[in-house]
Length: 126
Image 1 (cartoon, helix red, strand yellow):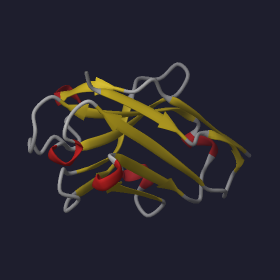
Image 2 (tube, rainbow, N blue to C red):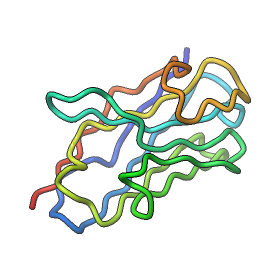
Image 3 (cartoon, rainbow, N blue to C red):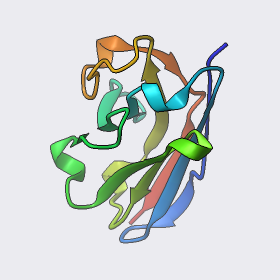
């Protein structure tokens, strides 16, 4: 049974930083792409960042490029989202996700993500 558990959310002022973690279990973590998505109140869920199974390819939504960095530690079955220079518009519930197929090149294709965490709240005040 695949489980994804996010942590690291919280409240910060604009310009601050947070680091989100997603711990995965239930299968061989190193075979699967990992993605981060977010959903703000009243808005649809959107893609934020993703990293390929081997850590060689990353993808970001334009609004976070240069501020967010996604990485993974396959030895710890964890994916990390480092968020710097946070803005109020980054306020949302952040979810990590993973596809059902290994080595799939899923990245920003939301439709291919099958497993989702419970989410962690990020609040950025101005």
